[in-house]
Length: 260
Image: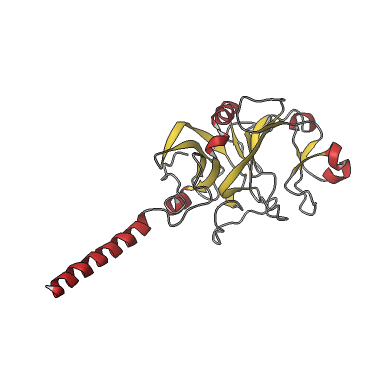
């Protein structure tokens, strides 16, 4: 009787161990820094060199991601995408985002301040109207690298050499791209040369790639900003399809649904 009880006990322990191992393979390996996110903006591209892709919005219901609204076409960097610096663990393989490489940063990122040419916007998300003196500093040697600053406060010399005026309509021949957008918090530590001034913004023409941002039609941007809810702690993710396939379970992201 004692031997039979021992055998049954051993079998139960072994079964529990096998179940636990199976569980490790089918669900998130560990809690992610974005585990509390209830909204997700997910951009997918066909591969690392693709300059176009699809943006989808998701909401978490009962622990599951469900798509909200319709997908929208987007463009990314003129050279495609590369691993960025954000909330996700470092990924040693594939391209790594660098200043001036023309690639959009891939990974999972916090969403920063929304911005635009108007004083206000129809959004609950924090918004800042830009002026002619607002610049994002893309000069790697600058102590203000990867920051939006006001030249009236930091001085004209501090923004010298930057190629990122936030009022492109005034500084770049009526350019509409920054009419409405938001900051993607790539390289939050502002490491020199790791990439700067990464935004989601309007595209100037359908299919036209960017210098490293994510661009979309104005109607899609307005719908996105109206949807973002600070209480739901949204995050932004950009991944090529094969990387989403590889990582979605471990990173608690929706399974791939390619449409490019």
